[in-house]
Length: 173
Image (cartoon, rainbow, N blue to C red; front, side, top):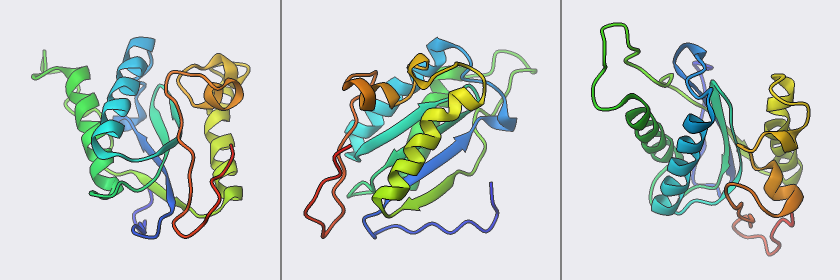
């Protein structure tokens, strides 16, 4: 992650967020782990009330496209999500001295999405991630992303529409 990353909040932008597993290990490589992460994402979304416009859960990293929650900054959302996933995945105590004590890298990348063009660009980037990583041949074959919702109106998680503060139109995606 960049060391000089600047985060801008309070402008009504969406946030394209990326964070990785510790040392980029494939700690989310099985379906059970990715399903668990999606369940925790849904819980965190309900708790903090942010709009979710896109996601992809990869074996070693996660991409999210979210709005700013009203009560807390996006950093709090990411912190709570990461803590819950790591606690569920690791259990309360390491089982051996060899067991990995950290689940996530400490920082995360946050890019402000300020236009419909950037929104579509980030969604396309996320949805093509499993194809670029050669996990599947087409985005439809990776259920742990928002692609299916946008293409078929269904998926593991429903997506929200986004209306920028001060704009009348909601993006019809």
